[in-house]
Length: 152
Image (cartoon, rainbow, N blue to C red; front, side):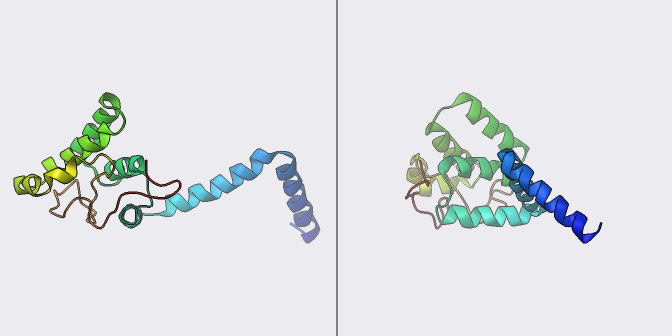
């Protein structure tokens, strides 16, 4: 394509974007989709752990990400069940006790009081939190969410 044709095409597309605002949104989201799909599962898991440990995710994002990034078949079935059968903050408590049920029994005796806190979903810094029954403490390095747009 000649330089003049390329310029004409560029300005024609720009005019379409200005006239039809949805085009700019679609282009932006297409680029975002390409970027997101380029991430490996390990990269997504590491990013989740970093964001969760610094309280940059709301409780619902922590729950969803925990199961979709780390959950085995049983964990995913449990997650679907708590979405369908529990409401609101009770989901966090159910999640916390489920994670504890997959850890050694001594864990529950040691950290049981933390599990009833329905404002902070249990997380772990280990990528295999749900699939290998990790032994790291719940809420490791995590504070209650604070600030605008973060938390409840």
